[in-house]
Length: 161
Image 1 (cartoon, helix red, strand yellow):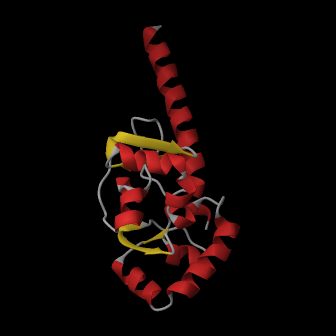
Image 2 (image 1 turned 180 degrees about the horizontal axis):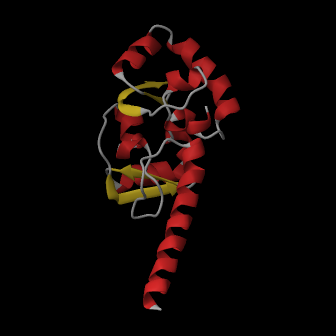
């Protein structure tokens, strides 16, 4: 009997976890698995407030976690966590954190903060150095195309594109 109860709890927990991660994965680029806050992690754990305000790619800490729209964000300090909580829309990566160049052509590829650009106070991330270099040839055009495409693909699973 105990074995059946444990099995049922494990299946239920997996289904709940998979369901919440699947919802976020449709509109946000997140790491697989869940954080201690029971939400998938955005931006590879990089502090988005520090990135946008100082240009530094600093790894955040689980101690300073905010969950917004079912996605966890890590920060380096209480100050950055508070800034995010005061205005999440200002700090969330554009295009759900997916590669901006990929989104501009209707695809959802991983957005890696190693290759990123902050323009007009907005954070754009890219899949790789080669993709980032292609973006730099026409950043405004790529961003404009991504904004249009994002409206069409935002709620479409990456695997369906």
